[in-house]
Image (tube, rainbow over all chains, first blue to last red; front, side):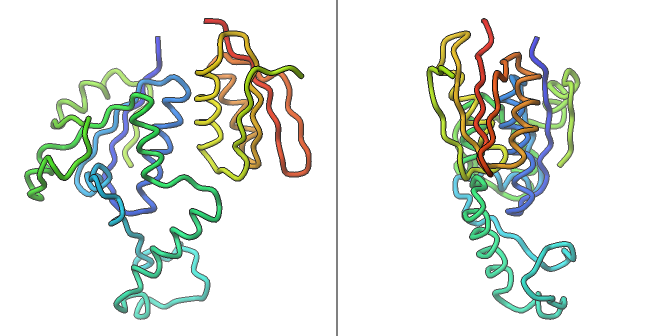
Length: 155
Length: 77
């Protein structure tokens, strides 16, 4: 019987978008049955348009910067956009997949996406904001597959 | 070594070589051999792990500088 992986994706920044999609697509390639429950900011990863994903150097002292940059410089207008642009350039240069490609790979290999209905209501998202082929559910629907999974991760 | 299909994953980073490998194998008949080229230094450990978990067989690994060539035999159904 196939092994099962259950993930919770709770973050919506460009950098944190990677772990759930990398793990899910790889697990699917290893013949796992995979489900991801997207909640709070993680719901951003199910939006049709992924171009709004950003990375912020602010409050992230481990982020490698070309020159040392104190917090009061990182908070200047435009710094987030510049950091995001630089990160996207690095992603392309190093042959790292785009989030869109990894998400498509997940969908093509049968990874199930579940959007947290409570968060959708909380943030006034519309079902039409999201890609096709996802389900909407709550904590109980997470446990429906998490309870019988071999690996469970909160990201 | 004889192979039925070749996939070039040069320049691609984790997890793309594994995803391309999986896709390549899915297009092959059982017991046929897939040749896959990768430059990701992590791919050696990853392809071994992939084969150990899926039952496909890593027949041969050649290294030429920073390029790795794997020959993977698809498992019997």
